[in-house]
Image (cartoon, rainbow, N blue to C red; front, side, top):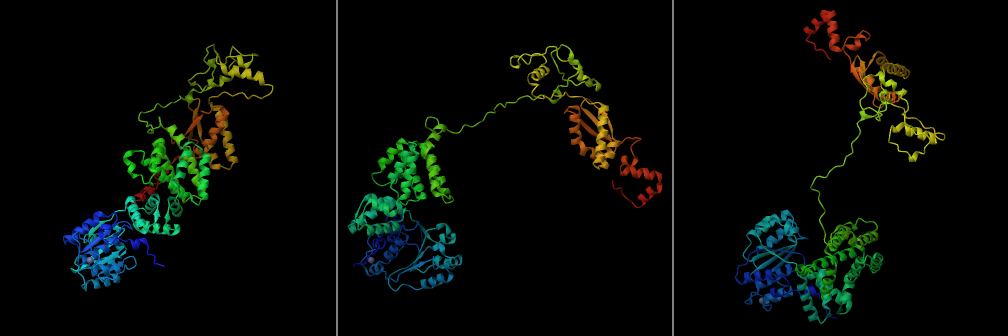
Length: 602
Ligand SMILES: [Zn+2]
């Protein structure tokens, strides 16, 4: 049985011309060799599997070839080339910096560099994954990299250029390797299957190229795998199966049922996809890519970005034409959000189904938010908008009936409160208005005509009075000093009962004066007394409101420092006043204060 060599090794390019997809680099290198302008240090950057190490090897072989072709390629026939191809050349050293990244590893390398090659012109040192070197290893390397012996050439390769120190970057000639395009990959794969006499559908090779994402090594190993599984018959279907890729036909069907708002159909389709072993995230991912492809072929300018297998382009363009741009963009958004949150979702299946439900009703939502199919910007409010307000009746206008209203004037209440406190006591004598509603049914009577309130009440009372005990709304009463004083004394007694002796004491000596119908003043002698009254204020007001049926009643507390016979002396004087009073009586105290320079603590 013949030894199997993986395609990636078997078909590794042997000269610059066969390197796939990196013409910009191979041409430059060939010219440098031809013109003998070779740098002594190179940095090859680029994604994995695009030919960095391959190019480094070809470079090493070519500069050591004793019989270079006029184009600057190796002859592949001389001793040096043969030993390079056999892997026995002593002029090439490869160091994997990922596993040899210490200072000592670099020191060993630097030691070797000193010795000239036994055969050939150059020794080539390839340091792979050079970004993995420790910073001290980098520093140990710097000197040699800057001034290497004439026979030494360094080729540093990395996938992560940004991790390389600037001091290294400045000492190297930098080559950026490109991702290999799908077309280049497909061409290369085609060459190989032709050489190997393998039957392969082009669509299958395209799928492989897409899956390998610009990495030639991956695409070759995928091809090897499928060839060995399928006995040399590579078809589109078995490639999809082996790569666990969902057939685009499913996505076309999924989109179709969504556009028809056939939620059940979409769910059933997802179920059948799920049964085939495709997990939710794969479906989301595939569907997002499908939508992206549709979006791309909406515009002929971007149609070249469409990367689908041959023969499918026309179908994509056809479907894209019937799908609105706003739907595609919104659907991509929904899918993207769902994919991001997929890991966190507990019920993965429900999570995907939820996205399907959203997509199903997406068109409807867009139609509502848009104008004739094109997405409109949200309206912005620039101009000020009128603010509707309703005037609130000022509290002072709350009716307090007085005797004045007993005349025939239709106005029942007055706005201004009477200044005379006593006059308000007359309110209870208001006779009923002249026009009264008697036995007529309530509904047929105009209410607002003439003194509505009483009439309505009477009517109600007559109608339902027998059944219900209608409480008459008592009319508000103005303050009067006698009633207030009686209340105040009662309140003081209450306070004593509650053992609030200090407060009760204050209440006893406080005097009251009425300022208006709804306002009175409590005169107290000290700030402490004011606080006692203040503490009771809420309760006091509440009781007063009930007593007078008047929620407007309020009072203020005035600290009266003026002389009053019935106020005990100590309650009226502050510390300073007390001191002055004492100093008046006992002048020695004042002298003492002055001699000791004391300050009064007020
Ligand atoms: Zn040669």
